[in-house]
Image (cartoon, rainbow, N blue to C red; front, side, top):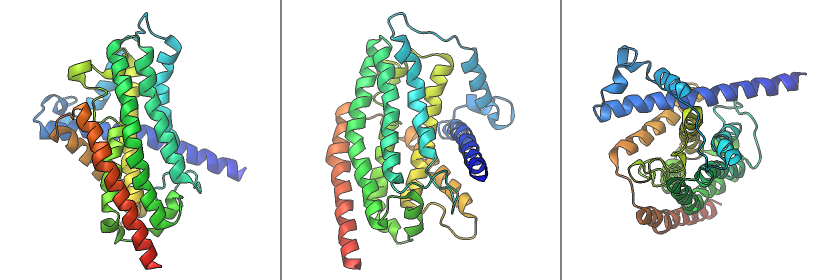
Length: 317
C-alpha cells in the first residue's frame, strides 16, 4: 500500500509541475517580449503588469470553435495535438529536481529521454499530413527534415556527458558533476541547447511554422483547444530542454546556500529567459542555413566535444 501511495504522490506532483511550469514560461514570455519589444498589449490585461494575460488567452482559446477541415483525415487530425504534448509529460518523470526528488530513476534514463522526445515531433508531422492543406504539409515536411538534422548533434552532445559521468542515469550524472565540467563540457552544452531549440522549432529555427510564409505550418488548420494544446506542448518542451540542459551541463541541483530544488528551478528559468531572448533577437534562418548549421556546424562541434571528453577521461585514468 505504501508503494502505491508513493507512486500516486509522485504522479500527482509531476502532473502538477507539467501543468504549471509551462504556463509560467508562457506568462514569462509575454512579459519579457513586452519589455524587450515595447509591446503594450500584454502589459494591460487585468491591470497591474498585465497579470491576467494568460487567463485571457485561456478564455480566448476555450471560446473558439473547434473546426475540422472537410479534406482532413479526422482521426489523425484529432490525435496529433496529444502526440505532440504527451511525450514531454513522460520525459518529466525521469528528470530529477533534487537529491531523491525524481519520479523514476532509470538506469538508461538519458536514452529514454532522447527516444521519447523524438516522438513529440511526430505530432507536427501528423498534423501537417492530416490537415489536407498544402501549407500544413510543407510545414510537416520541414519538421521531419529538422528532426533528422538536429537529432544527431543532440544525441552526440548528451553522449559526451554520459561518457564523462560513466552512467546514463540522470540523477547519477548530476551526482558525478563537478564545477570544472562547466568549461570541460561547454561546447557540448551549447550544441545540446541549440539542437534542442531547433527540435522545438523555436525562433530562429521556426522554419516549419514560418507564419509569414506558410501561415502556421502544421497548425494552420487548428483552432480552439486543439491549437492551445500545440502551444502548451511548445512551452512544455522549453521547460524540458531547459531542465535537461541544467541536469547535464549546469549541475542540476548543485549550488551554494539555497536548497537543491531551488537551484534547479533558478537554472531552468534562466535558460527559459535565454530562449525568449533568442526569439526576440535573431531573424528566422533560411532552410538551407538551418541545415548547414546542423551538419557543418553542430555535428563537428559535438564530435570535437566527444573526442575531448575521451582524451580527458583517459588522461585522468
